[in-house]
Image (cartoon, rainbow, N blue to C red):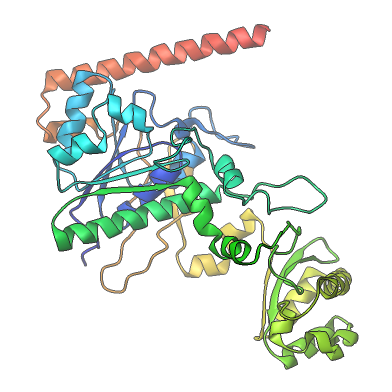
Length: 427
């Protein structure tokens, strides 16, 4: 059965998550994705994170997560030989995908204007931190700073504490979704109109896209919304997270009908809420027409009620109530074992040298007639050099020179890093 992007070639020059995760989607949908890496490789190969006891030199989880199934070639883009390889790859490509800085791309002759003249059918997809225009167009970005600039951090956490980061790099990952969507749109446009074009998005733009409702509400009303801890800044009523007696937590979102509301109030021994005229409709229970004081009260009552029963008791009851929208709060270990994720094949397994088999997020998009699929393990640095460079017509002597140069640069860089570490230790 054919896959949606079968036969398409993507040349990827990316680091970290926002760029690579977009390439991962294209790979799952059938495209061949060739990741061009510098001599040291994508720096996320070495991002070990916390509590990582895998052997030294093991490929890092961040790289594993967003690069499975790709091919890796290792060339120094700053050399004539490396530039020749990249140009040869682009001559065969449908998509050039990058999150390198614009200034670096221009120096390498890989700016959009240059490539569009050479390869008019090429889809040129780039993503950065703060958008292609404006005074901060070239400002460095990591996920948290885009979340801060876009307002998400300010509205996360408790009102009497400092603002909080989200518990995952949601801007980087959602930015990859935006970039992949833009690429797919440009490929469709090329199919219909016969020309390639530039696709641009940014982490800041993604932060705004994730908050469309909240930002529009503030723009329309002038509201001064503030963070509300376990509740949403723009939703009155009980919508929020409540702790149970055994330190579990339940997200209670909505009760759709009166029978469900009565059942909840009976189970929680809060019959006064069942008869309270302020909470008799689903709209009221989502905060429509009630005051801030009403919200504070219903949250206080439910907080006390949830704290009197165990997580198991609440889960057993709530599963009998189809009109109550709720979920148990799960940690990441539980997510990896969740029966829903397993039933829907949302997780996949890859082999990581030095660590063995591990699970990661798989292909989440299901197409009935041309489905995509996971394509295998994350690549070792430069694993495809011999095969791909040979296919490009690069001779053996030049291939050896490219490999020798990359090895020398790696060794020199590692030597410098060790010397720096020793000097820091002495201080």
